[in-house]
Image (cartoon, rainbow, N blue to C red):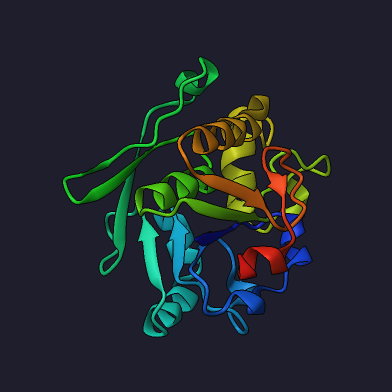
Length: 206
């Protein structure tokens, strides 16, 4: 069982302190929560994020948090690598890569959350709980914390969620996991629309 924690507005619906002691992977900017919540894993994909939050990341490492990243220049972390392209997703393709050469690989659509779901599956977790996945949030990118997402995604594609690709990716992930003997639930009321809701307390006790 693992809780996968995003950074969308519905993250505010969950008291993360209740998850201390549970297996968790937090994605990207959870720096505001670190004073009362310590994730098991902290996943981010690039060195831009590392440079921005270097002090917080190093402190988390010293507190026993395991970092998971694609950034090759960062030492002492669990390395993953992304493969694939957005065009393949548009054709209905989804792949959950096996571990190869000691490195976890996953199919990339440009969303760390989607990678985290695949990574969790590869780590052997068959029951997953999603928090703060708001890829179909009608309020848009201004609700989100990471200004580098504005600079990179909006400049390149013109919208924060180009062609709803991230929401579509989560739809595929939900379908794939249930079809292959796993479970995936939303415990924060996320505006993703891909996962069925389950109350946090039920998830923790289940």
